[in-house]
Length: 577
Image (cartoon, rainbow, N blue to C red; front, side, top):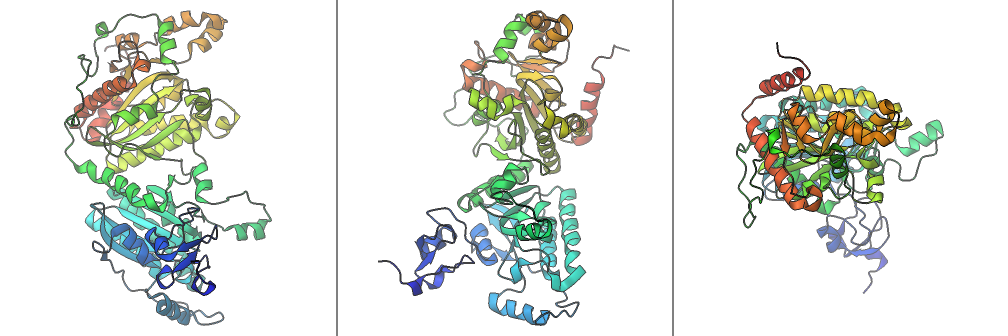
């Protein structure tokens, strides 16, 4: 039986299904049974629209009713300016508190998400539009200080129209107050995560909401400094469709992921486990999973004697390294990671998202790791979509962001390299391609965590080197590593691209030659006919090699890692004595 009009909640603002039998979706206008809507945390089952949640509902949704403990912020001045517009600010505050039933627009709770300890601060848009006044700034700062005291991650759930005008510069300075609270967590190496909900604007967007290590957003959530109405009325600019939505922000490299409400606890739990797992003793490789077959290849995990490798024509190596069926970074990650697999993060938080570079977290042989790799593809369409593995400046900046996060959290870095080189073109040069590569070289030289780089296919020029300044630089048996492509070398020096086979031979770009010249630290064995013939076996061999290297490096502290890494590269090309 259809509901009567009096039984419907039709407003797009915070439908409350508890007192009615039915509600209407704020987007598709479908009539939804109220309790079903509530069980899905106010998510429409037809179109996926995410309705608002109160701060209390957020805390219960993430922490559960039983595990959450309220964290009370300190007292603040209610009306420092004695502000009055159409009514006194003090009266507005009192009315909001009575109507909403909470002291400010932020509630803070401490509890667990899937067993992982966490502090959560959630904003409530119903309380004066979630605007940030002194009480809200104090609550966010208190949440950060609680996370710092207990050395556990902080999750911020944002919903705000911006600063609270009635508090003047008091409100403005909450941006600095909360930003420095986040800075203290950075210095302490404590993980911070933002969950952006609709809307998040102004002073909140320009402070703590976007200063966290990881920023995820609900579908359709809007985030920005100036809202569309302000932009249109101020500079008369026509805005693109979907402007400032989560999907728009993802495409422009400003958020890590768009996560529906149904998966938020799962994603947050994976991130929190990656953080807490770094404290586990993972100095030895985890045992094989039950039923997992032992490695079929009896060779050592890493080959360090050139004599263990056959001599092959360099041009043949080039052809195999470029084989379209060779495993990509995603192929390798799908095989070598434990449990939850790969949790991908996106964007450089500055200008864009590069599909040629993938970054994220995973667990390898029981050890949480930060992962970076070039992504190609197995079809013409996939190759084109990923720019043939050629990264733009956005991609290198995204990789740099991932490496800085790994350094903060104390996670080892694994880089998988398969690229003909950095992306050439007008846009890349306008974006500062040379600067982005140079910055990565300097950054990797100073990372205080173990870094293992593996050339899995093509290792082309500076585009490959930008991910290869590592403690252990490995190359797969049939991969190549070169200053330039054989074709490019032949065109420049032979004046004939047809001389590419001769150029390949002269460049000594194959794994055996690189080992003979001590330009790589070791070679990862491949299946007998090449990695492209057996992805699972190739991945198992890679996993063994990487685990072996991380085991070797696990006993070194940051200073020793940096010293040895710099000494390694200092000695390249220098003669003895």
